[in-house]
Length: 409
Image (cartoon, rainbow, N blue to C red; front, side, top):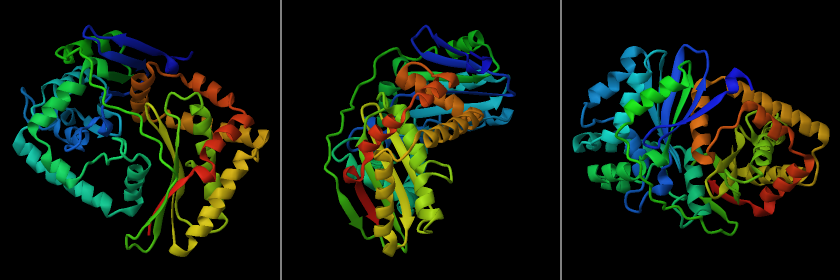
């Protein structure tokens, strides 16, 4: 195992797990990954996880919003956060030497935020503007609309941002209660990537998160019920059609996860040689953008394909997509092509690993959902173990007859 791949696992005295990787760098990356997102919200205050992501910076029992805003900035660092369906991440990037400052600040945010009503009032308008901007962008709105259909009746189905009405319903008390319930030692992971030794990181985290509660968070997640395939067309008044095709697949714990990830990269990954890009854009000129994605959750997943095209080209695009999916399903990818696909995917992962910010966040995510972080060598070995039969088998999970579709036209 190389120095780059050496992972250290630690636990604070109050039960907070730490994943640490020491590298030679001029900057440090650290943060907290919370096992709580939009899926954990209760009806009436949908959007509260994302709302907290915005308003957790608006003051604590010890410091003002101005202090929080400037704490990392004044040393050349930054403080940021994001929310998804199952996680909220609060993190900082800063020049080497300011770890204690970052740990103290993030620890204070997750244990002592007060959510003053005046600050919430202002931030509500910011978030509502964000909601409206998404609705004005059909290439983004179509994803949320598709989730509502494919996960109908489930907390996975509602928008991460919430609605204008639900955001206006959220109070300071709601935020404090959500923080108290979910931002606990057992429900979070602290991640670190940088030059500081593990023992020093542990000491900084112990100090910064000393008041963190060691209690279990509530489990409100229920596996969504299966839905029958659907084909929905909604008139949105735009000059171009925006379409999502998708189907449910196994979740993040599935043994087929690596094969599905490789298949996704072959079909509609970021490479210009992805099969759908070649078939629909390079050969036919039907689309500007076509891509596929895996969304893997704790108990289920979603495979989706997005494309935007002219109204008259939808049927032809769908036909070409069906052809490509069937080719892969019926062993029309040989050993040579599969080896080339593996080399490409492994190369992309190696390049991505040089982005320390995303690499640090990936460590936190892996620790949160799997309890450990795969080394790069382990990941490469898993990719290389995928066979032609594996690709054909997982391709059957996304065969054309299984796909639902939503078009905003």
